[in-house]
Each structure stands twice: as C-alpha cells, then as structure tokens.
Length: 114
Length: 112
Image (cartoon, rainbow over all chains, first blue to last red; front, side):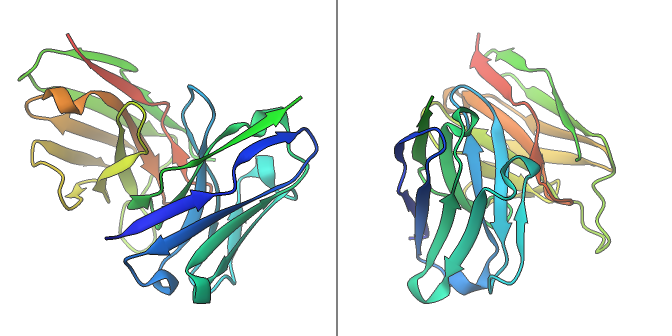
C-alpha cells in the first residue's frame, strides 16, 4: 500500500524549533518530488516547500524562507522539514505530499504558543 | 504568485443533483511542456486532502466517474454529475504550473 506517515509535531514556544519527518512506503521514494503542505486550523491549504528527487533543488514559499529547511534521505525513504524561529502563525496541520499532491499523509499538528 | 479564485465558496446541493465549482487563475496555467497543471482535491471532514483530478481532466485511480474536470488557460470547472452523501466536504483547486503552488480558497459542499 502506498503510504506517507508524518511525525514530529507538537507544542513549541514562539521562537523555538521543531523537526518534522515523513516516512514513505509502497513506492519507489527516490523517483518523486515531495513536499510539505500546511493547513492552519479552520483554514485552507498552503504549499510550504518542495524538493526534487535527489535533493538538489529546494523551493520555499516566501513566508518560511530562511526559517524552514526541507531535506530527504532516499536510503531511509524519509522526508524532513526543519523549522526554526517558529511563529504563532505557523500553527497548522502539516502534511507531506508526493508530487503534485497525488498522495498525502495523515498530517502532524504543530502548535506554536505565544 | 498565481492567485486561484473559486466560486461559489458554499454549495448546498440536493442528493442526486449535479454540482459545479469554478476556479479561475490570475495567469495562464499552460506550462512550457504543453501541459496545464491544474488539480482538484476533496477534503472530507477530519480527513487529509485527496486528489480527484490532475492536469485539468485526468481522473485519479479510484475516483468515481461522476467527477469530471474541464477548462483551459485560466478558467476551470469541477463537475459532479449526481451528488452523493459521501461527497460532502471542501473542494480545492490547485495550480502546480508555477512555484509556489497555490490553492483556491475552497468550496464547501453540503447536502440540502
């Protein structure tokens, strides 16, 4: 079964850091672009970052540039999002997604307390 | 950034009746490779989004054929031929032609 499973979310203070992980199974991980999409409580969807198959290209939405870093380990079938200098407005469910959104994980909740 | 505008934002529909959602982009979504990267997603209450349609009109595996997508350039439409109870949720269009990929505001479909 094709699956993405996120972990690493939690409650963090404003200015703090958190590292999200996404573990894939059921497909050849190294063949696909991957990304992180977030959804603030009761709000819409926002694509945060994406990374190409070998990790040589990274893209970020302006609101997280310089604070978030996307990376991947193809040997471990894993995608990561290192988040620094967290703000209250970063509070959201974070989903990992394959390609243009063909497959999504169940999400991991990040709450930034002010 | 490409702005995606959906209408309506709320869509009450009677079971068995058709439904239609419009999505307009602020720029053409035609990419240099000849493809138009416009996707539609369904998010049922309490669930992750699920892709229904990619590249304007290609239906994802397992998606009922009552869902269809059409359009070109900057104007796109998702149609449900006969709404069923399981279709309740929020529908989003998303462009993947340009970075950052951007979503519409979402259309909440409910049963009358």
